[in-house]
Image (cartoon, rainbow, N blue to C red; front, side, top):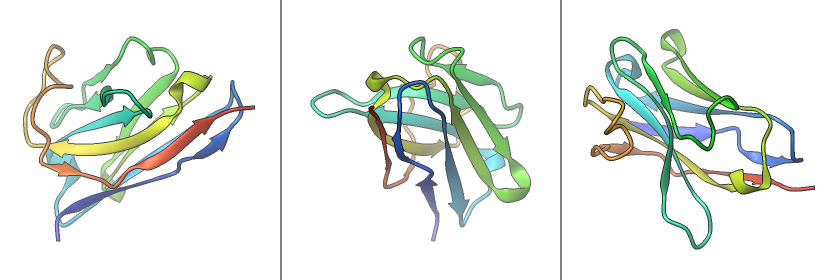
Length: 126
């Protein structure tokens, strides 16, 4: 069965760090563009970051640039989202998603992603 599964969420104090993982089964992540999205209560889902298929170019939302880093480990079939300097406004359910599209800077958050994980809760609070 083809699926992606997120892990690594939790409760962290402001200024702290978390690393989220997105692991695929049934297909090879290397050949897909992988996006991280988040949705806070009462808000629309928003794109956080993306790592492109083939050349691993990376893209970030302005709100997380300089604080979050996306990377992939092809041997583990996993994509990571390292989140540093976390703020209360980063609190949300975080989802990873996979698309076979060769995304570009202007469309990575808007293309159709075919595989979605179940989400992992990130709470930033003192």
